[in-house]
Image 1 (cartoon, rainbow, N blue to C red):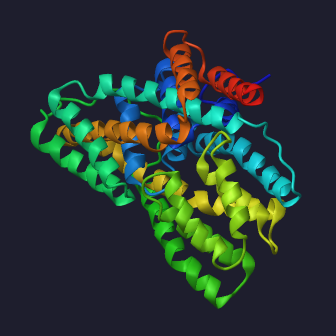
Image 2 (cartoon, helix red, strand yellow):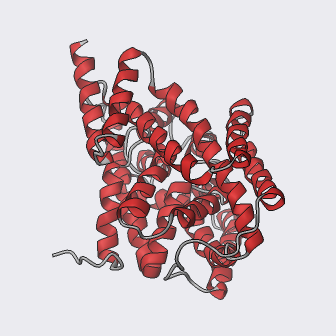
Amino acid sequence: MPPHDDRHPLRLLLIFLQLGLTAFGGPVAHLSYFRQEFVHKRRWLSESAYADLVALCQFLPGPASSQVGMALGLQRAGYAGALAAWVGFTLPSALALMLLAFGLTQGTDWLPAGTIQGLKVVAVAVVAQAVWGMARQLCPDRLRQGLMGASACLLLLLPSPWTQWWLLLLGALAGWRFLPLATQCEGQPLAGIPGRRAGLIWLSLFFLLLLALPLLASLWPSPSLERIWAFYRSGAMVFGGGHVVLPLLQGAVVDPGWVAEPLFLAGYGAAQAVPGPLFTFAAFLGSAMQTAPNGLTGGLICLLAIFAPAWLLVAGSLPFWLRLRQLPWARAMLGGINAVVVGLLLAALYDPVWLGGIRGPLDLLLALAALGALTLGRQPPWRVVVGCAGLSALMTTLL
């Protein structure tokens, strides 16, 4: 029998495994799944504390949704909890993509026609629900509503990862200058967070690996070291979400001839259709390598390498972040940052979620039905995801 204590690592593994099996729609949708599960359903932390975690992970390079999951696991059950959260959320999509790599190399197909489109459509509903809920909570006044709208417009006009980073910085400055200083931090203290000394060790290890891995790969050339360095630097340089990793990985694996470009693009397209973090695309690439290490071993090597920077940065930054957010001026800055985060989610709702998911009137009707099921019907997200994928496949077959 699984333990019922939410602070037990095995229980955390099962909770995040359910999310890893059902959290479709990319990093923006994942954050809304986490919000629904851990803020509203389980009440592990307040809306404000969750928004702070999201803001921190937006500042850090790497996959924001996975980093939020690691942070949640860390505050519930320490390092074992962080590992359980990462494994549960990551394992389903990693295994699916490694199996897909084998299937594509063998010329097989395993997804019914229309299923991928249904998953894109349901992402529209999931993200729309998240944007509406977070806007009501985090943008209560005109200043923050203005920050939200301006951030969304600027990101759509200048769609660059650096635009997102600068908007977050400007939001922090606007909050510090114009928002009233909070007298105390909302929410409850978070347990399980390592101390500042441990945080410094993790941050030092992050930078040490960033400097040492290319040196080791040049002094002792080996396929394994070369791939660890290629995927580690890709994970350490991604600002702005999982989609930004595409050009980095393309240069890392296609240019040297490790993976053929058609196979790379096919795998990236399929990665949009599986639940869990987009960074598990690394597991596909490692499994699809033309030379050893490949298969299961290659997939695991590349998967661990691309997620390593995310873990080191979360474990290293969180101790300082949680102390910083207790300061009144820091809370005011976070108010501005959170408004910008909602604006970034609003921009993502339009591009790529809406533009990539809604192709015609039937897709729009399906998205509205999914949104109604989530909001009015209060159906769990996984049920809505499965239903939309099935209906889309059925419509594709009939029409």
